[in-house]
Length: 417
Image (cartoon, rainbow, N blue to C red; front, side, top):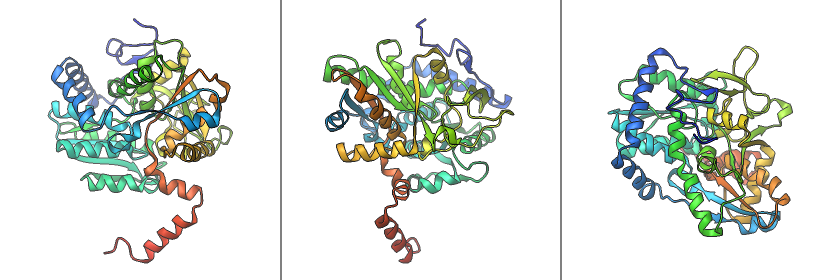
């Protein structure tokens, strides 16, 4: 067995001491059935072929690997490439996994898809594949996230999904996850829970990672074509961890490649208002799996914060926890302000609008690149584009013209026609 690769199907869903299937007894049969269906699908050439065809013809893969010439010149140091996941269907990497799990749900005879979402990108991807394959669809989203990610809520509803606000707790992703699991328990016969990240009980972390690994496989081919060699450093933001693990996984055995996962430092680690699990987080079992969580001494998850809704989550995927302990992946963090500055920098140097989540990865490159040689290569995963964040960014940057535009629309009675 390779040093950094764990066969979770042989280890009962564990990555070292992390992961597992710590789920209510009534969910175990559904999780076992999902594992069986996925393992059979892996060996079914027609399933694999349909998945790959949809990635190409429906989602627009491969997404481009772009040499950021202006950013490279501005920062000095390493040559910087951007993997543009935001140019795929629905504007983020989330569609890769959503297509794969929709095919699995159809294979299992399910009629309904449900999902949790924070930034709204996973909810949008789920609603999109539900429309494509004819599933009934319900998305659970914290009330706070619904307000700050209104564009995605609008499109989910237009796609035919029911978007259900979660009104308790922090009213963010953590609570949406809990509500989606409760709903699944009540509707096991008809419903597939389409988990959006490398979290939850086994086999979800493995399934999501495998579907997202197309990102890293494409980067290997693309960078070899562009540079004739593999990169020196890979950087991605880390919430639950699917875009980062999808990027890193195909490179885990290439020991000369640095891998950096960037968590959300929010208002600063010392403030306590952040989402950096490896900065003060504790090992625990939450939402069906063992990993690092921001929690108190009684094991209750703490309130988290990030300007990026998709990083505003108390836990991290179990495979990330394992790779952290092994030292294979370095985990750093970026504050809200650093992410916003990185977003503005990429806007003005490359004409690209990254999602706030992805801007955290750009912020790490801003710190790291100047200290590297001009012959070295960094690849950043731009996991999504920033259209969805216009309300957040305009508010944070205090854009008066945007505020006046919204006031004018309200005064005109917009929405009451």
